[in-house]
Image (cartoon, rainbow, N blue to C red; front, side):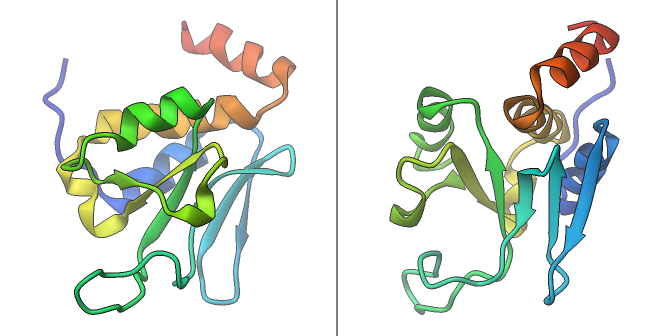
Length: 138
């Protein structure tokens, strides 16, 4: 197996585009929203008041939202304070995690790819998910 390397924003884009039946919407500010069956599973967020630098108050301009299967998966990813994954009160009860593109390198490309694939699976129809799992050898 090849050695993993630090993840980059391009890896999120590549992993999302590699999934079947994906459409990409591009917002007014150039942010990408990846969808399957009209349901978002990964999106690059515009700066919002709920995600900001606690020292400067400046809004983060590089937040990526990645869907997760359920609250347990979310908590497993955000509970470590040293993890690059986080949430904000705005996303309480929402099955997603947040990560800043500038912190993706704190994790590996393989993990990011797996998270994007799991996000797709959580939003795809059962038929599409089963078909992808069968061809992916899962």
